[in-house]
Amino acid sequence: MEQHLGFPLETIAIFVAVVAFSVWLDLKLHKDSKDISIPNAVAWSLFWIGLSIAFFFYIKIHHGNEYADLFLAGYILEKSLSVDNMMVFVAIFASFGIKGALQHRILYFGILGAVVFRMLFIAFGTSLFGLSTWIEFVFAAIVAWTGYKMLAGVGGDEEIEDYSDHWSVRLTQKLVPIFPRLHGDHFVVHHGHVKTVVEQDSSVSVSREATVYATPMLLCLVCIEVSDIIFAFDSVPAVIAVTREPLLVYSSVIFAILGLRSLYFVLAAAQKYLVHLDKAVAALLFFIAFKLALQASNHLFHWPGFEISSNLSLMIILGTLAVGVIASLLLPEKEENEETDRASPEKTDSNSSVGKS
Image (tube, rainbow, N blue to C red; front, side, top):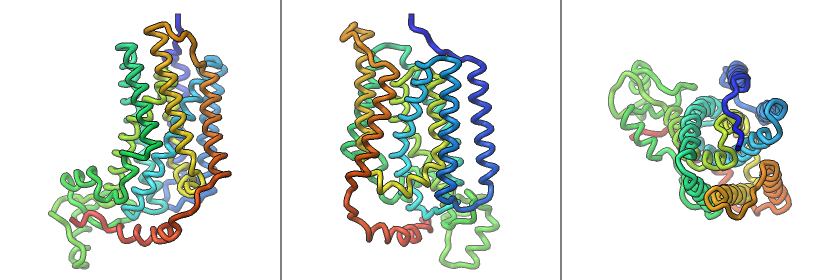
């Protein structure tokens, strides 16, 4: 009979305590709105990775190698899938003219929202597996389709260039009137401030009077959150395909996304060098889909009779990602849009006044 990890209270308590303390420490040390340097971002990225490795060894010691390998495989898969989403965030921030420390503040609240939504998605996804073995084929198809989309570059938010006109932004504008200027690191501003600015600057206008107004910061946060929810529809099934243990799925996903805020600034600087990583991630998704379909076939038809172990899965995931990184370093793409890259700050500044309509 197949054994399950379940929900050991000690492991849950340690996981919650470590995550809560780390989030508090991160917030305390970054409470001032200062630009995040690359060395600082690298240091915090290493901190979160180290924390995840420490939890991996805890699981290894207390629950065995198999569960530890499943946790690590889920963590690495979620982390690698997040790279593509981070590139979308780069475009979103550019569309709203959000820079430096303000990006860090938005990502903080965006990731807190992601923690909550991931919990709901994982609870729903893992419960679906209990309904029927055929659900495994459905999840395999979803994961394979995600891999195809990544290879083909079709669909999703990646094709959008100007997120200031994203449907989530238009919906927010209907619910809350917009003040089309940044006001420090505030997501909303009160009527008194808006009235003063409008009286002093005739070029600034608002659609209607209200008690509070949304700034481009709030619009950007909404767009980031919606993008992450859409991304979760692809990533959560992939991680659940690695292991159906809810505790392992949630802990691996949470450890992965908590480090994304710091990793974002590293990836934003390194994105032009990791040109083949998306292909490696797509190949991983096809592998995960194959593994899930193989498991379903074994359960339903008792064929072909072999399974891919968690240890082998981990080695394939690490090896595939390593190939993607090495290929990016050895076979870099020629820079086609140097002028476009140089012009992007101008485009960013021109878009900083968003939502005037």
